Length: 396
Length: 135
Image (cartoon, rainbow over all chains, first blue to last red; front, side):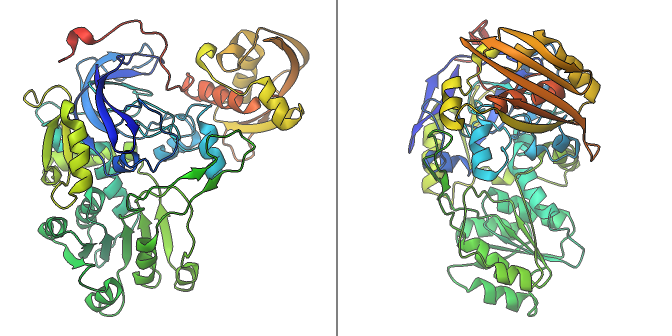
């Protein structure tokens, strides 16, 4: 089959690779009809995430048609259309049973789990196409993909809804939604969102859907601020205004009730010294850029909530722990528990209460995926989302 | 299944741990009796343990403890597994004392909770989707 493979910094290629196959009883093979390039894929493109190997198939936002199911999979049937969560979750461990799917204890293979256990204290969960830290699973920017624990993750999509209306259930919509959900929004609340990338824009949309009174969106790219404005947000261009002062003014001196950091590490990524060395070697994480997060914490009102959906991987210093503690803030964070949120979000989409298609700026054949990475990297103002069509752009 | 599993070798273990047996615990969301019975059937051990060819039971306390002596891959070692009810009603705390215990114990947990061992590796290709592919 054809697949987008990683070979190094700014070097991704579409190559012919072996077709995936059923390995475990609960697996399924999906024929991918639509897949998107995620902002976090740019960290891989920039080679700022460790443990990548040449030839790794990328892609963790994808959907398609079930073409094969394993003998232990009682849920999926050949021919069904499904959206696949980027998080791989077993559904049966302590964490999955509490719907904390993004902290599944079992989906990261025993061997690869060592690396994140050394870095973070416990192993992180398996995910598609996102380095060997998350298991080294082949991703969905390909004609076909093997989906482990496919009786837990994939959400069956009713006929008659086009791919583009539901594709973002795989990652960025539940990620933006959980960011807003973590703000415990009440009807009088003002929510501020740093970063108007896909997750930030969906957090704006989700905050309104969850009842926020006002949403204030912060970025520097005019087109992205316009998109936030079109959803009803007030905006701050941080190149033109002092963000904290502007927020103080806009909230009558109080500050926003909840603040969402959807900027994260700004594509700087993280790295680890001696990462692949023998187990006894010291593993050192390198500092993440957290200027945005410092601003978020200082701007939030006393007793407010700070929600961090954005992607951090390392450590940080100059963290304003005093501002956090003395003003009684709470922080909620984490990768999105996609499987938990998908069914409700699908309902909202089918009822017409959520439409995420506004985000898509470019549609390309899989063969042109390297060009998609290049333009997404170089023109973040106009290129808001690139959707790839592995079965040919004209067929879906 | 064990063929595709990379794991710490005896050499690595000896180099890093001075050949001293290592203890490690994991909580598995399954009843103690089920875990004991599965482990006690030594035919199951290769599903999650590496380099296992034969094992001899040296101690056996039903539903609580199994100790064994292993022969495999030119090395010989011994191990023991203990099963205790989780004090927090979260299943069974399984403690294994053995060399290269970490990966084996993770795979045991995966197998007992999910019915399979997580892997990103493909076995040899048995079939192809090329006939249905667009390219």
